[in-house]
Length: 149
Image 1 (cartoon, rainbow, N blue to C red):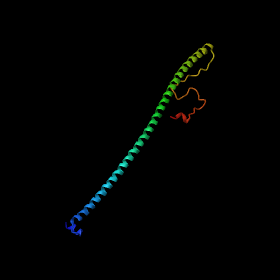
Image 2: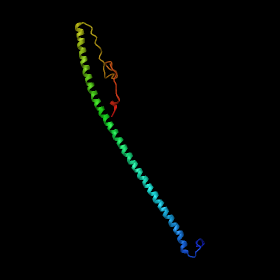
Image 3: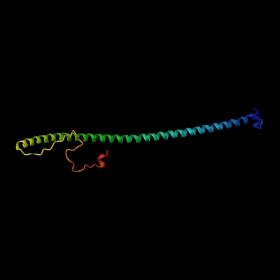
């Protein structure tokens, strides 16, 4: 108490006790106000972060949907091409059988007539599928729009 009486020149001790209490209250009020402001800024940052993340989720969902559509379109084209390829394989087999039949007829004609007929050998496309049975007359061209999804 001696320290408080040396700080307060007046004889009334209640005024002297009110000043430090008022200063403490003022500091406490300022600290509370500062804490409220800090909490408000923190809530705003979190809200902005949530908003940004929701925007990213939306963008990623859109991109995912576009990729899924591209995959579906590509799968559909694959099925169509595979079906056409199967038709072509069946036609190739049929034509190969017809050619074998015609060659056997030519061999009979060659034997009966005695004339030499040049009968080409029939290539087996299944043994070497990378070799085409006939030469390509024109190059095959592809355009960029064929590959679009």
